[in-house]
Amino acid sequence: MNNKFLLSKIQENIISNNGGVYFLKSNYFKNGIRRFKKNDTTGLIYIGQSSNLKRRINNLKISLQNNKPEIHNIARVYWQNDMPLLPFDSLHIEYIEYEDFRKKETQLILKYIMEFGELPLLNLQRPKTI
Image 1 (spheres, one colour):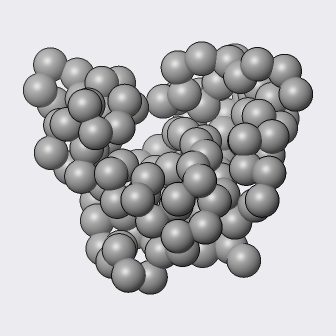
Image 2 (tube, one colour; image 1 turned 45 degrees about the vertical axis):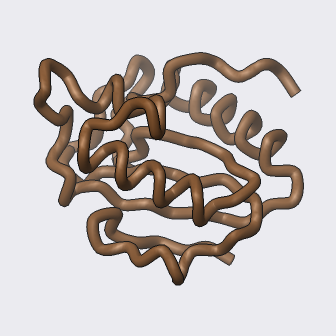
């Protein structure tokens, strides 16, 4: 099941408690995000995984909205000098439930690197190989 939501409007009760992979995207980049090999016109800025999507996505929303890196570490990158990198209202979340979510996250990040030549904007480190 594929689910897409505006992060600022998402309600906790509609998110699955199951494990899976989630994608943070932004519609802020009208011509795509400049990447090493080519522009990323999907607006993908982060790929993550969790054993509990509801908890992780809720924590992501709180941390990005309120500059709380202790809740989700990508807030350290999203917030620069007390200013958000992108408008919060431009952020969308998508998630897909997977049993083997860790392996799937690694596969998706490596696929992104192959296509664009670098990690998504807010992913800080390359995954260990599968």
